[in-house]
Image (cartoon, rainbow, N blue to C red):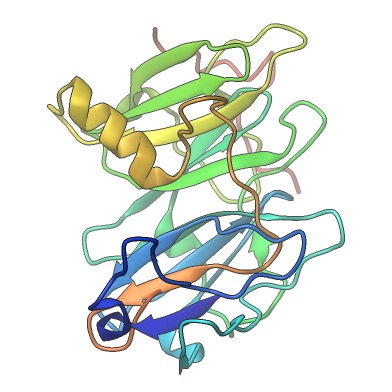
Length: 245
């Protein structure tokens, strides 16, 4: 991950500008504008998350590769970046087998950048890998898309809220060979065009494949000073969503 001053993008050429230097195998997963004094969260495919102050990452040039945001195992990838704003109270997390949950931001303590993070959701055989995490409000909706083209829109308030170290509940019912590949937050009363914009902004929508971008450890933050940076089944497959000791 890295931070770049927004002024470095003041004059964009027709063919664009390099925003981050990527190593082979890396992909850009998200870019967000920040105030320069906010906290951010990174979510990994393993179900872990880390929360830290954005100033733990110094501002760099456009072509720099950045610094370690979160320590990952060889088979892990960063899936989501969330900027913690004053009105952010909850994070909604979704896994590839259609399960997920809401968790209060306050359950994630602030750590130093570069750590291994803490469990955000259990990525058990039932849940599969973490696919996406996004900030939500109870009055919002979420859009879920599978690799078979199934799309579900459902109110956030229908998703059970539970602690960090839990598996969650059913978000979308999938067939045996079907996987969830995308999720996006849709603010209350957005129309269909705004819905598509929301999917693109979340980085979970690609016109041809609906495939979600993966990244190893590189992400971008953007801030003004120093920047770039259906219904839900609350049954848990027979098990209630509860903390596992």
